Image (cartoon, rainbow, N blue to C red; front, side):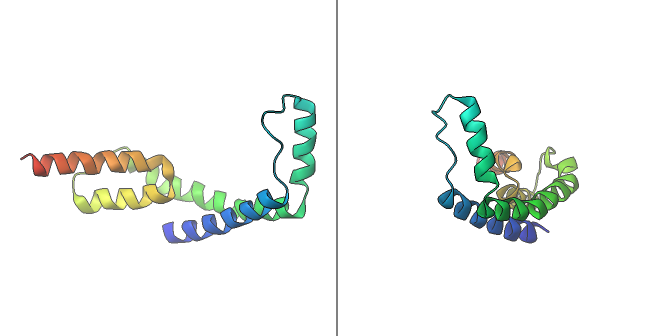
Length: 115
């Protein structure tokens, strides 16, 4: 499931880059909010942005499903290297878990090397 999520994410990122290059978003330094909102509406209606939005739908659905599966145990401290590496692998895809995996790896290294 993680591999499929990565594939979908890579594909949607590719569409994002195409859309961004074809129709860059307005400069955030523009403080005329109405002009900014209208420009964003026009840009989001472009076919390149529509392709990105369509590609994001299955990616977001997979993200939600994957997160629902792993979230109950991702806050638990992992005590073995395989468990920490699994958490790290999941964290490479679901970035909200990456820091926790790195902390677990640091903790395990300190325990092993300082024992």
